[in-house]
Image (cartoon, rainbow, N blue to C red; front, side):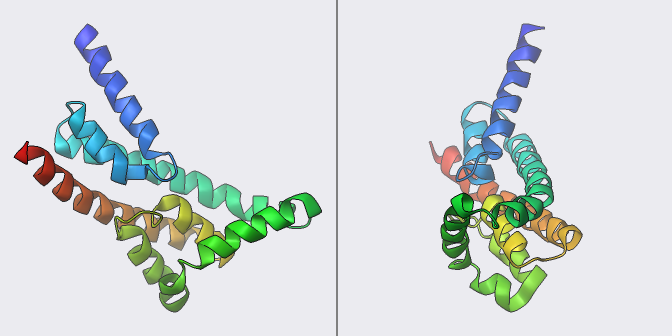
Length: 156
């Protein structure tokens, strides 16, 4: 019984880490492997957590930005966040939903679910299409990250 609870605790930690900005599945997959999860299990848990965040972000960012853009206090802050995010959005602007998929599938810093959802909201992409593109992109990023992580950890 204690072993099951310990394993479940590790899985919850890995899923929560995959939901954090900057960490996302790129950091959660190696974390799960280092905590003793099977590599595939770590990838599935991390990808699931990251996809949950995409669903939440896509559904709250549009109304949030629309409402707070009109206030003086938040307008300048949102403007800075938009400006920073849009610097990374060249591929998305050019290829729309396919660009969003490519952007999110690259396991590089700041090309994950949080930035992708923000850019998708700024560009006012269709939420359902953006969710599918980002989910598929996260699966690809998870496979790439798993391949790299497992190769690195199996050396040691």
